[in-house]
Length: 368
Ligand code: SF4
Figure 1: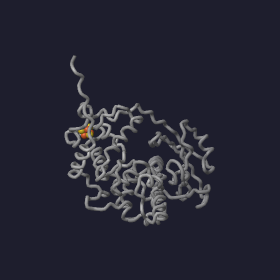
Figure 2: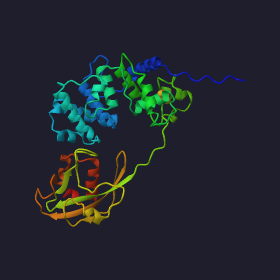
Figure 3: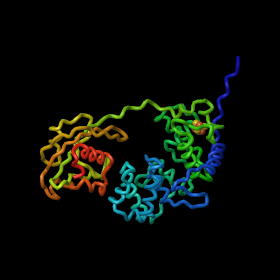
């Protein structure tokens, strides 16, 4: 009877580290927040870049990072900034809870910690807005702690390197354990960034360039001839669709009613054009008008505004009303009246800008 084929040897961490660091020294991306080997990283800058990079691409973050540093070059400067100025500067990066936590965290570090970020993952995780990934990234890059942050890129590289057959999300724990076992004692920050770069430029989701990869000689997925199979994913649940109706109330001088969203929850603390609750059942105009922030003669506007959040698709329709002259304070508590030309001065999230554009295109009232 022929012998069963030997299983492929599991890639050894020493060999993987050596290959990755050699590749990183030659091919590291030139990014505004990167440090040269001879430079001492500034924890504030490392933290700022890592918060911005959560859920956002490197290409988008670059300009914001430099702009923030120019305006608030130290954690003390950021702590002294007005929250609205920070939210305003954050516009376009999305996920605004990050901006609020960024500001809160800066105040804690600049206040009770005398401007010094803690060095360990456990202590970093006690700060607002810092989860497992960011704590590991800051500890490794800023403080040289032996650890490995595990984001989507690093998860993918690791899943392929070890050909992890267990599907996500259940397999994430095992993959994270394998990734962390690769952490370098001598150059933890560089190794983490090498993994990030490899995932972003070579071991990409759809078309890994295995021929150019420093790990090709040890990668189990490539040996199996099926790199694209990993990480294996469980079938994804469909995003639900939610519906809402927006109240576009306009005074005779062209001012439109805005209000501030509650601090907690989706788009917390941002400015919005008032709307009904966003729910799975559609609203009728009459039902929606009964929940309007002011009593007026509401008329529906044609068309639907679509926007996708992480967990649901949103479909909005608009009700408009001419309110005559109510004066500056003629709205419910916490609201304000503002000319559409002044919208850029407020922290309006993307979905609200879409609404304003929709009204403008429908009846020209945006630009009045
Ligand atoms: Fe990814 Fe291919 Fe490199 Fe394996 S050899 S880590 S699949 S790019």
